Amino acid sequence: MNTLYRILIFILVFGGMSLAAKGENERGDTLLNVVVESKVVITETSAGTTITVNGMDGEEPFEASVVTEYGADASVTMERDRQPALLRWINERTICVGDGCSHWDVSVDGLCLGLTDAMGGGGDYMQWSKSIEISWLSCINVLYRFSRSNISLGLGFDWRNYKCTLSDRALKVNEMRGIEWGGYPEGSRPRNSRLKVFSVQFPLLYEWSIPKTSLRFKAGPILNLNTYASVKTRYQDAGGNECEEFNKNIAINKTTVDFFGSLSWNRTVGIYVRYSPANVLKSHSPINFNPLTLGFTLFI
Image 1 (cartoon, one colour):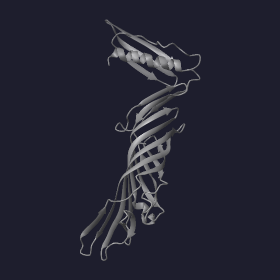
Image 2 (cartoon, rainbow, N blue to C red):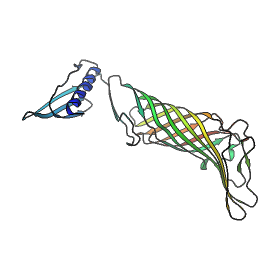
Image 3 (cartoon, rainbow, N blue to C red):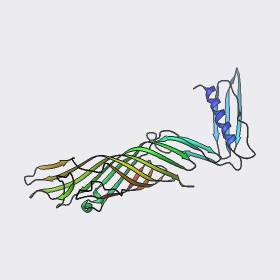
Image 4 (tube, rainbow, N blue to C red):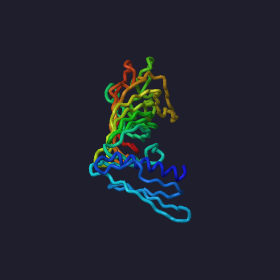
């Protein structure tokens, strides 16, 4: 895009801003018209915006400038997305004048890392301190921004690993494809037993930027399509050989809903909680439970 086109764009943008600022300081939509090769400098302050153009008209240097002052009753908000460039998608900078701005946008959310508790239903022997969740909350979001808030629908991925390291407890898959507690072979040295569940998730979340702070609150339901589950048990037999029992023929609930809430600082680090009222496994499984996760967020 050449310099002339950039200047015309600035004229349209800042002309619209002056019309949006309510009060006695309203102006027309033509602020400056320059048709030669030039350098444009834009300076923004809380009081207004200054556009300065420096260039050459033939052999003569020139400078032209125009100042857009915001009215006393104008509300000006500047928001800069502080996510790393890898996670930043669109809308690096938004300027809203008057009552604020409302528009559609596309974005990316970051990672969740937490400890997962298997609540009730025979999951008591799963160890919260060793059961983890890793989630990419949204690899892509479609959202609608308004005022200090937005509502987004995204696509992401979730991986939960429920683990037991007790010497007298090992997960077994029965003939009904359900999961039950069993033991290790006699004379063996137990390592651990775990259940892993992988999900494709669709978070529908509301986000609010808390006034006069760098804190952001995000909450809403997450629809999970549970596409994979497996059980693995590891131990050392009486002869000292490392052994592993693995089974992925498990009857899990293919669709579940979680409730998610997070509080983050500067879209960099934060905390979150996630709970599912739905059972992970089918109702006929001797072991069934509702996951509750507490952890940290990155770039959300």
